[in-house]
Image (cartoon, rainbow, N blue to C red):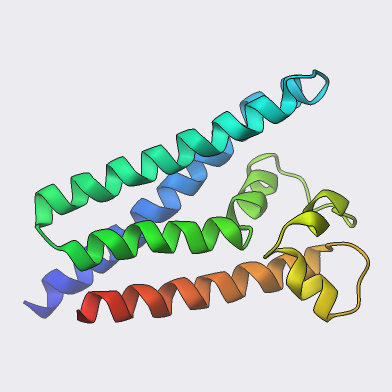
Length: 151
């Protein structure tokens, strides 16, 4: 029985990671063509609407298969936490096989990702501050998911 829980946990983690890889692949494919147009922010809005819709559908599907409300909710909440702390940004640059830019001014406007940079006294998001944000996100998402699984 314990082994089944372990397998479900890893499927949970791999599914979340798979969503982020899938979304980053879409972003890599369509981000650059839209950057030079007036439609860029429309693309960004539609991208995140699609991302959240995908996660809701996966969470509901998970519930229909397992009948486990807490794990289904944990899946969706973990996605939101990881998204808000910059995991997709890191995976995006990994897929592009580029290092994180030394200056990420656009992320300084982000209400969550900018917090480590501001705490460190930086005027912009740097690779270090983004990685701190992602690591905190992973820790918080893991904690929340484990707590919800206990319910």
